[in-house]
Image (tube, rainbow, N blue to C red):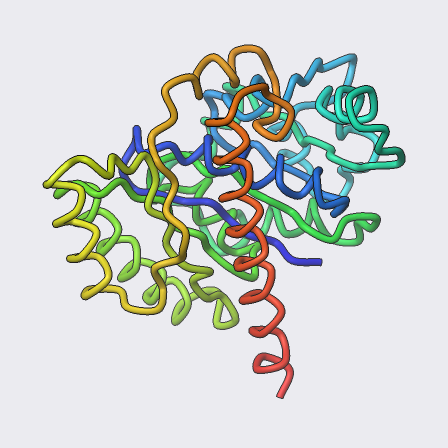
Length: 274
């Protein structure tokens, strides 16, 4: 099982959009996937069409991780039913450990080593999933570090703008320090350039700058700005089942990115095992 944190230290770069785009690609590919919504805003839970239905949100599970019954509290995304209705796919799995404002109590900078292991303890022993995607808040406080402790890889999201590029560089340094202190097997899964406007001279310049700064960590393809992405998320739809050529093109890009993330994660495992 691959556990990937989707992170950014800068808000507004489309981190949750990337999380849901990869979840959509995983559903289309038939990869059993769990999305863990650690962002107190719980936007990923909303976009995935989650209804609490008497289940416990992730913060309640973090409170007593050794007694938490994650399998009893995940909620199936409504995307699964829609996919089955539209293309006849059966037995697809896309579950959500849904978020909420209560998780903000853990989003502080002073969490100790024991607290950082809370999410790893919640995830320990679950089965039935090949991929876990953790949507982190846009900070380097407790929730993000808790996610990194539980993960094999960190996938960074950036826009091709000055502040976002600087934030990505800071995040890379933070991952290196975190590996040394807490999680020696953690590694970057790569950097996704999101909301790219090909007609923008500034975006073209910053993309080239990012390639020079981060080299092979820059993943291809980049994700262009999609005018109706907020409409897709507001309707709790997967991009793979939204009509129109723009959505189909974006879905194909996420298929490629998911394949690259999974490939890198699998290549990482043998090195860690040596």
